[in-house]
Length: 334
Image (cartoon, rainbow, N blue to C red; front, side, top):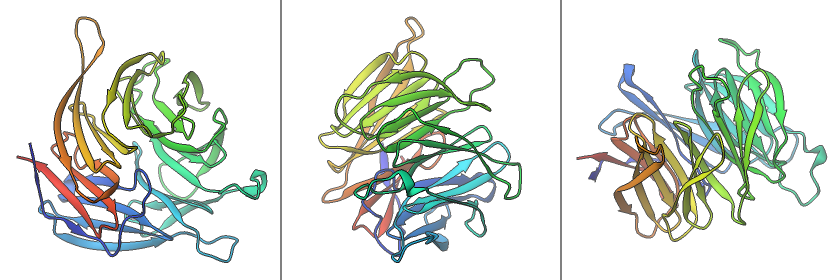
């Protein structure tokens, strides 16, 4: 069971975007960082365990060419083996900061040359894999950036071009030195999933076709893909083969966020039906198939949920954002 904790106030509402919450836990400082976007700005907040906000910072999208301020589409902390970067995507490009948002170390402008007049140009979907940061675009491409141990010498090393519709989300997990292991998954508006092995040259391992609805959020855990869809379903696939293990009719409306607590295999799902659910994933020792158990459900009446994240790798607390809600809601296990 989970109980409601002290909320963290925001300067304004979170934007009505999927995956609109990022969380970075800093156990050494006993702090948790939260990131939320709205319009042309992003809010960064630091909070103590009891929820007392200690610091706030606002970041703005780099304007580039154009007369109106670009909208920010996502903010996400990328935890690399040797540093942590804060990555912000917008309608103009990709901004990378030091983890506290104090210094911008890299800017990549989006090339709208191949976009039609009716196409929206944006970047969306952010994840770190090894010493690479992957970012999706409106054109279905995934940009792979090679990150140095320190400094601003970040290089665009590769573009992955297997999607035909805009990227929605990207998930990764450590490869742990295994060969031919699937450690990166990209999802798009058609529901297509592409499974990759990261490295100096990313290798496509398999594709999981869509079925007519977008895949809004995706996670990867111990070789299992958890994908959340616009029809409220959560599907679990074997990453290496694309075989479906489980289909859960988890929500009555579109899923807006998934998250995983890697230490315990808990899956968090939030959707436009105002519900948040927590599921326990486990692999059967006999057959090796995935088993799912429902652990907890929470309803946020009259709230359009847009972001949900665990606040620690053991899944003992989580946070939620909603549109027209000027606070981050926090829950912890009893």
